Image (tube, rainbow, N blue to C red):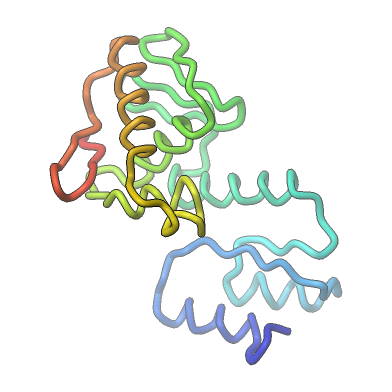
Length: 172
């Protein structure tokens, strides 16, 4: 029911290209046959309209957890421990208080560990579609500086590397 296309056909194309992206179908179609077909073709979840945004958020976190974190709610990387459900971070069993943006950044870096992430990709991740309206990336520098400082002060090794002129990399 997409304008000019069919969502299930797009999903079939994604799967034919062996892409591993997480897919949640959001549809007004709520028959059991439609749900089964979408899930059989390769969707990770199927949500019918109307829905509550907290439910969508929980489903998104579930797909991320399955796709990027081996279906666990607690991620442990050396001295760093992240509880995805409680949205808490500890370093050597000491709590680290992060803002929502810092927590999102940390998860983004860890889910893309050992990959270079450009400033523009970070801006888009933090701000969505409005990222291209910013004149500069100062807000990214501030969040990253604060995240690094909080983790380092708690006793975490410096895994977050700055690659000048390129971006950032979470190196393990």
